[in-house]
Image 1: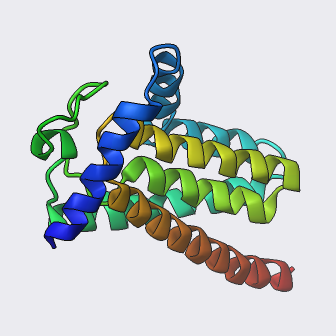
Image 2: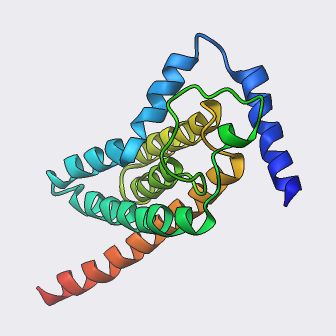
Image 3: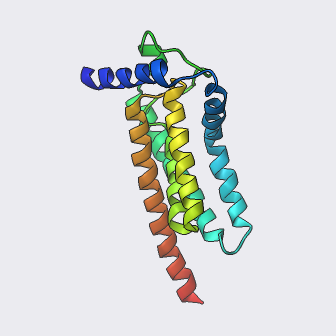
Length: 182
């Protein structure tokens, strides 16, 4: 498994050396904090609840966020217990505060893809594409600031994608029962 750490470290050090720029760092820090505790995605999903046309998307996204959080933050982070990259990679410089939990998978990425993929499926295309673009930016920001390995991001994308799929399937099943009962 050393080759995975070497691969991850190489990418993080490449980002630090060739992509990090002083003028970009404040923007990337802002983007990364949009994913803190999933607050942006939660708030956006709650706003969607206020409009009949988008209510189901809001409910489904909240369900996806819940599923993703349970898998990521309750189960996988504690089972895998992967130490953060700034604790392991000697030359990696952290750009934000140290994180209080384990590294794998990325919770920011999971939440972003869970909600973003629901929006892509259930909202008009332009809004869904914008949500996925923001999800990608939040995921990349976690590498840029030095708090996640690339494989943590991949894990977050996979769990978030599963959470979106599961929430959508549940929403369809519940929706059919609800509308067929009327």
